[in-house]
Length: 245
Image (tube, rainbow, N blue to C red; front, side, top):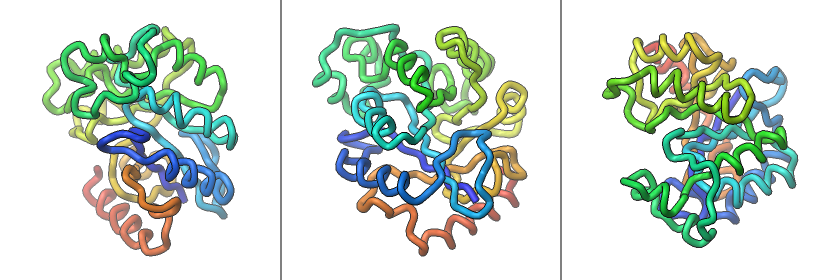
């Protein structure tokens, strides 16, 4: 079995976890579970955990990446390509304190650099602890997009050219897609992820999707791993499978 957790920011205002909680949470996971990346062989006798972080905010590089190195565990980082700068000299205090709701507005990503830079991303890739995924180009609801090739295909090409590594995973922005979009994603990626609040029995399941459990705003180190949650995880797996979503 596989649980894939979805996180966003650290020590921020929205869609966030405190550093204290994320440190305790990741330490707990590292000590008890097999941590895997998309395509890794799953241990059939133990719960497998995949850690996925959306949007590539700078606080991932500042706070999470050092924890991954310390604990020697791996994570997926989903990149919204438009907002990634080559490098930046903006102070940490400014980069870390851009509110979630403002980060993708206007040119804030250029002036305050709230996202990881390509330079920082390359460092993380070279560590073999962070695997990059496409999170589209503009981070928009793909159902309303007029340029799916840009969002799905070009975003992949840009990452691969920048990092000289194959990109195999697409993470749906806001979890929004339809059958046409999903077919295009499957043409260009081995794996697709969305929110689904469900457990997984393989990397693709029947629907060719890896379901993720939202794990921002945790109150305890094991809140999303408590036994009582599994009834819900299994229920949503069967519901998602029935709906083929």
